[in-house]
Amino acid sequence: MYGIVAMALVAVFAVAFLYALHRAVNVLAEPLTVLPAQSGWLPQEHALSRFHARWYPASIVFLAFDVEMLFMYPWAVVVAEEGMTAVVEMFLFLGALLIAVTWAWREGVFRWV
Image (tube, rainbow, N blue to C red):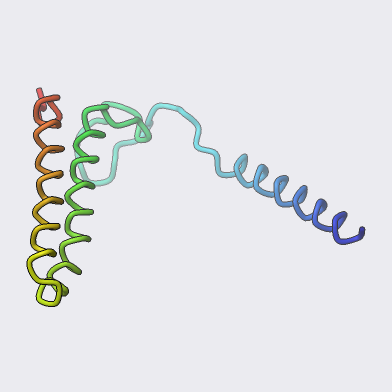
């Protein structure tokens, strides 16, 4: 019984501590009042502004090719052992990625204007 009470107290104190820490380091949404260091440009927007939505599909395509490299490095090591089946599997995987890039191209992910 004492273990449950102690666990509940630790949980309550942890939540209270995290809430107080959040309140202490909270960044207010105020406009910038000073220039950025050494750039010389006037700030056009708040430093914590969000990215434009067109960056998100491009980052997803980048992650797809990043994951492709994660699969190709170990494949290069075992392709000599596995033989032709490993080559066929890799070309199927690359074909799936080519279909994904073609779809992204058709949807306009790479169009920046």
